[in-house]
Image (cartoon, rainbow, N blue to C red; front, side):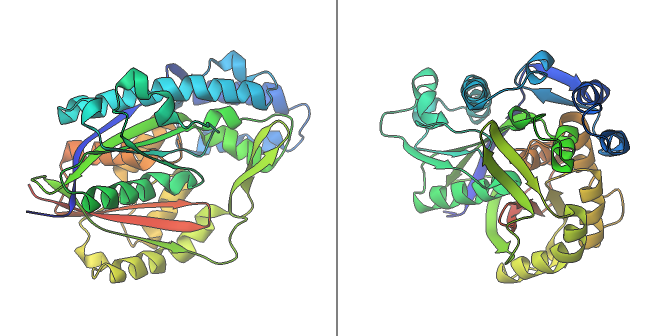
Length: 350
């Protein structure tokens, strides 16, 4: 019997409203150009992200009005609950399970506040058992998909034979702000979309793809790189340093260190599956990981089709990689607030 957690199923979902990048640029220009002189210079960001279109939980008109915490929270609860139910049902169907078969639910989300948390709010609609274990995780940001997979795998491994449902869900667009005219807000408007991914893991029986190992690295004195501020009108995005430069200079040694703790090296990795923060981040990752330019092809496709959805994005990339056939060993990587690199090694048996 293998005690490593296996990836039983994986599914993704997006909300109903599709926005083309040109459409978003026009809306952002209407809101910011007259009040923020730097916007015209920065507007090239929208064309340079590699994004064609993204999805939002609300129609475009909603984002054009100023919103406060109550409206943002109502929109979050309504949209997140619907998306949670949709992506969980997809993952359950692909695993040939019902919600009543789930023993543990890990919910990863950093873009809204819900108490009771999302898995409790949808428990009746989905049909979770009354004794299901709930593990809500907040604050991991873009690293949440990889860290969440690590957490879910350890929970599955601790109780072989039980089913662990991981849902990574983010509604990044609800943090759009036009009361604060800053470079960080323009960057956020050019990048972020909404989406969700769900995976079911189980240890103790057969499975083609197993979570082999996991590891993280946090850098000291880097709390200002990425995160949220809590403002009267809602979350405020924090981007205080150039992330592509940090990736280029730091990720190679960090991944090598994490792999060493796994008793692996870069030569053991057949495929990197990375969180694509944007085109410049992808280029920086390829350079930092000594990959040929263009190697991270699924990453470019996902960012083009969905934008940066924060935590679930890397699982969208994994879904595409699985559809094309995983090699023997893959390494999932993502970066998030902290500033932290999170890695999970997957072992696949053809």
